[in-house]
Image 1: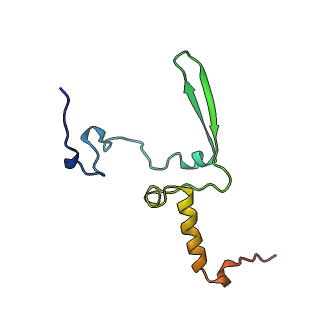
Image 2: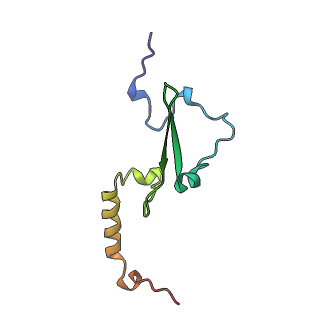
Length: 101
């Protein structure tokens, strides 16, 4: 018999009891962040024994949004629109960046 859980009784941010990681050792948030940004490979092991390898690297100019920011800006269009509106309110003297030689 399946256990029935009413959706109303669970809060969105609450983790169910079977996902208790409080006793997990060695877990570090962002442990592989730098390596991921530098590029990574994914090996896909097929049931027939074959292995396919795919390499991934973030494109030049790509940025990664933190989860709390991504809630408000789910795609490139929304990020660019918000940044362009911020650029408009920056005083023109601050927009020009000069580098001393």
